Image 1 (tube, helix red, strand yellow):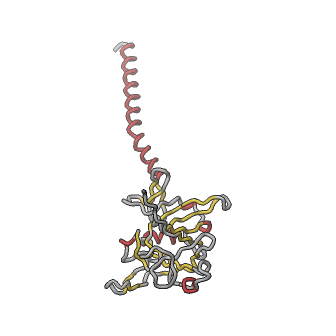
Image 2: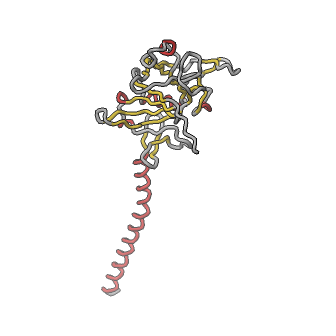
Image 3: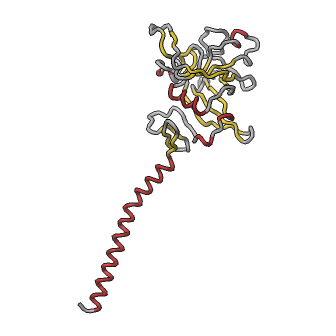
Length: 242
């Protein structure tokens, strides 16, 4: 083989090797990109996995209907959070106070069930959920392990588990100075919906605020604490169109 032919063979071999390396590199690139995207958009929290939704919200991975939107744990200061229950929206919002009290941001929301009757509570046994304003809010007075608590709803099922793992008792005393019957009521709280899951969201409780049991766990583990402010807004009926 003459010198020119030998040089041509070497050049061809080098070109084939370069093309082979380029093809192999292109095949690996999508895999690396997919892995990087998955790492960027999944936030792993202690008991559940959350994925980023359009708009930046974080929702439970694989859930058909996201019952809450949650920011990453490190971004929320529990002690700066208060709870806002909207009877109109059938939602409990966790709001965080930021910028030294200048702003409030919704960091989580959960569907709720409240009382059968939508008006203000005026007496014990009226099947109404009490309402308040920001100037005279409720507070969580204690958080009790209610995992073994039962209740008879007078629907034929008898005494059944009804409260989820936690009962967050509400202190109503500051909001009803002229109504001692309601002010001293210690049976109103935020709890789960064991054996009543289908009632959330909706109207079906005897006065308390019900959450889905799994949402109650998130609320307890991440946001709620004794002394926390709770505001329950009145139901606002939409105006009919003429």
